[in-house]
Amino acid sequence: MKEFDNNMNWYKGNIHTHTKLSDGAVSPEQCIHIYKEKGYDFICITDHRKFYPDAKKDDFLVIGGSEFHINDFDERRAYHIVGLGIDREIYTDDTFSPQRIIDEVNRQHGLAILAHPSWSLLTHDDLISLRNYIGIEIWNSVSDAYSGRGLSIDYLDVLASKGVFKLAFAVDDTHFYQRDLGGGYIMVNSPDLNRKSILDAIKKGRFYCSQGPEIKQINIENGILNVETSPVKKISFMTGLFFCSDRIYMDEDGETLTKASYEIKPDDAFVRVECTDEHGKRAWSQIIRC
Ligand SMILES: [Zn+2]
Ligand SMILES: [Zn+2]
Image (tube, rainbow, N blue to C red):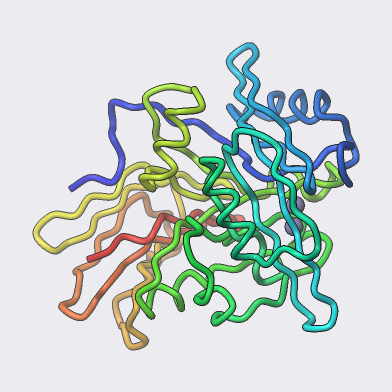
């Protein structure tokens, strides 16, 4: 069973970015130009409580979206939810619960993604108690560059170990277009570059997250998971077991790797692949349920 279709194309996207419509540094037109120049194929402009619609120009796709936020200073936690692929403006205010926002996004045929849980100081129980959101930002560039809390991958594993499976997203959440630009993105395996195909591939989990390395294919055959990557230094197979002696593959002489295999154990409920290149840049697969 192959995770990706070799006959399809790869499209690079950033699905969380801000512009002058809220607290970003550049106009939507400049934002589109900047990402296009950096080799991206699509973005979603997600200004705070502001809707930016679909657009397509010169082989560059903008998918309609918005970010909805609840900053709860009393409880010292924030819920920020990206609505990817919504059809129109959704009204929300400070009285809305996070679940009500997720429900509204779903009602507008969008995908609700829980943004930067680590930056937001959310607990695992906070995430487990919400329903009907599709995924979690496991990497957020602005949270890393300016707050030191960019990585949220542990939420994905802890939730999966409790039977709650979510998609993983890497995003820039660009505000300043400096250190927060280009630090994390998704690569979508899709037949073509249009809103429907990209959203469909995302819903099916046919994409991976990256800061640079490529995950070319993941294949499960006879209980063995095989992965092919661009040259990396380390390939890890993350599961729901705390004891695992054959999880991490590195060449003893420091040579780069482009493939590795993992024998799925009888007690493994899931496996995901994470690889790290010589510059410390990572790529993360989706969770694969066993
Ligand atoms: Zn946010
Ligand atoms: Zn944001």
